[in-house]
Image (cartoon, rainbow, N blue to C red; front, side, top):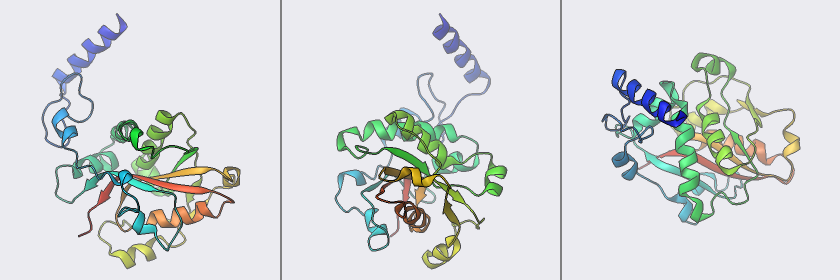
Length: 235
């Protein structure tokens, strides 16, 4: 009975303010969540988790030792799928990120990418940006993964300095822009010996993730793997 009432209320809300797919703009059916079936089916998956020393792993080679890395789908500026990241980050729909991250865990189960992960942590936002945006989209991604795996989410890192957006910067400027911006939280030493999954929304040059992974690797006997929702195509 309760489920029927919720379904009725949801249907009524869709009439007043229809939910639409952020990729194609089509109104979503009652049993479609965030994205329509067609856009989910054509999501430009990277499938990095199926490839040894994939192109994402190569971002970190010679910089910081990581166990493995993957991104769920490709990001291309101007692509309809770019609206997913934009909505999650700027349009107050972080729950879509949570949902997509949880879906990625289930979809990648057969690859064993998440096997052995013990805790999940996110790339942090500086308090000024957090206050302006109201949430850290990478935390929502992390919690979607942690809840699905049944493991803890921890705040292992903090952003100690604000930095300007990375969006329009080249590789060298990105590295300079994040130097000294992050630090370990005071109780991070409790993660000694753990396999930590570091999570962010998108990887481009890998500068931010490298800085954060390097800090995590300073904890004794820590293993680090990396997941991002998207990966920019760097042609």
